[in-house]
Length: 124
Image 1 (cartoon, helix red, strand yellow):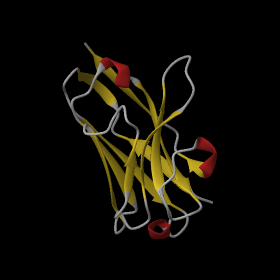
Image 2 (cartoon, one colour; image 1 turned 60 degrees about the horizontal axis):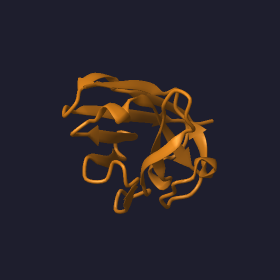
Image 3 (cartoon, helix red, strand yellow; image 1 turned 30 degrees about the horizontal axis):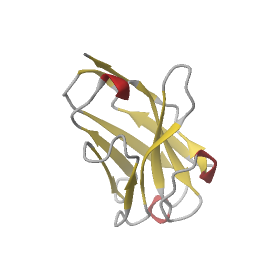
């Protein structure tokens, strides 16, 4: 069983930054791709970013490209999401998720294991 713990959310002003972390345990972390998704109230969960098993390939939603950076430290079993130039529309609960494959993916149903979520609120 895989256990993912999302941390790092909070309140930021527009233009500010936050860094989310996703700590994993339960299976060999370094061979699986990990992604970040978010869900705002009344909206469907949407893709934010994905990183492959080695960290050599990343993929971003157009809405965050150039502002957010996904990275991973396999020695620490942790994936990060650095969020810069935050906008009020980035407000959501952010979830990390892990696939059963090693390549990047953007569909919710491609991911098997999910963290509990961490709230990000951006004020204008």
